[in-house]
Length: 113
Image 1 (cartoon, rainbow, N blue to C red):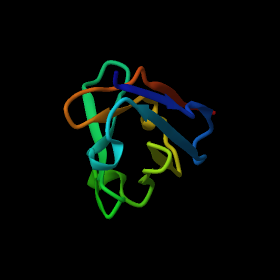
Image 2: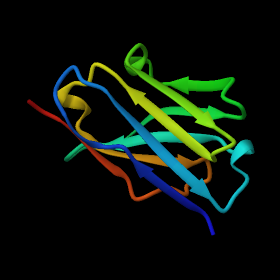
Image 3: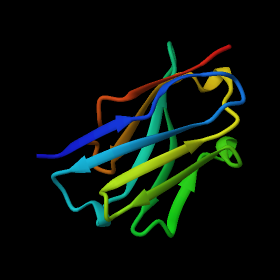
């Protein structure tokens, strides 16, 4: 059974950083495209970043470049999202997702002073 479990969210002040983690099981992680998406209150789901293989293939939403970094550890079957210089508009529920649509329960990020 496929499982994806996000963690690392929380309350952070503007300008702060968080590192989100997504632990997975039940499938061959190393050959799966993995994504981070988010949904802000009252807004549509937003694709943020994707990564494949050993991490040499990745893509990130242009507006997030320079602040967010996606990475993965195939030995730990995990994907990560390092978020820096957080802004209030980054407040959302963050989900990791496998390419065929499996996703986790999400982790809440609130950026507020």
